[in-house]
Length: 289
Ligand code: ATP
Ligand code: ZN
Image 1 (cartoon, rainbow, N blue to C red):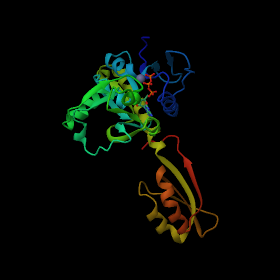
Image 2: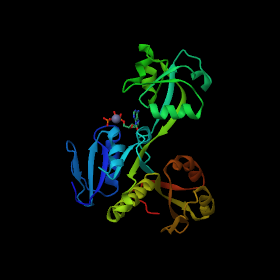
Image 3: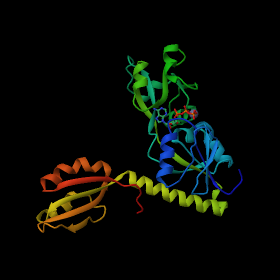
Image 4: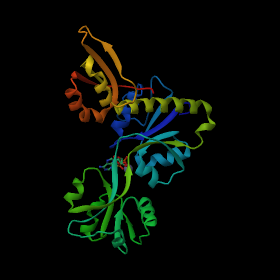
């Protein structure tokens, strides 16, 4: 489709699909139902979405079939495509770890020397071995890596975990981290040459940043006794000065502030103790700093 639209590749169906679509919607993009189509356009932005297997996305972005793409950093790095990673997106978090049979007592990295390690990530693993001066044999397997030790085709494995349940089911335990991953936005290296597309990309990135800022912040509202103002200001994170409003009861004030989402539960006891009441914590849809 040659129409000057920005072309964004996303995973067709998998762990990143739903969250990627959610992020784009939070960015204000109105996207048609995408259930079984390869390409859909946004109704209110010059953007076409291409739905692809995640493994193909880095190469398609490198070759310019898509201008940008969303993939796990693990895939972006493993495929060694010549693309730029422009933004971490904060979801799809997982870890590539080396795991060993539960009964193995291994303590040091150099105990991996001479072992056979099964993985679907030979490039990342071989970089890790190179950096740590380990001489082990990498056995490449696509899928179901965790059964390799019980089949006798490898001693240990290097695979993605998020909860560790699959490891447990296969009587394996984590030995060491190899790579931390999350979804990333990747970009074709020549995009700047098409100035119109580049403008569209900058606009999209600004929207993504605003959506990500909003995700990590909440809007806190509360009432406090006037006399507690100094103490309350000390408890609140000093991101920006809070908004302070008079109330009908002249001994009281309303205080509003943007705070990091994960901070609320740490400061709420202190706020109560200082006399705050009627605490309201509200999600923020977008935040432009
Ligand atoms: P495709 O059919 O597109 O090739 P896939 O099976 O290779 O899909 P998924 O399992 O959907 O891929 O995972 C997509 C990405 O999600 C991974 O590359 C990784 O970055 C991330 N991810 C997050 N948590 C996990 C997990 N527990 N296991 C595997 N991948 C995870
Ligand atoms: Zn895949």
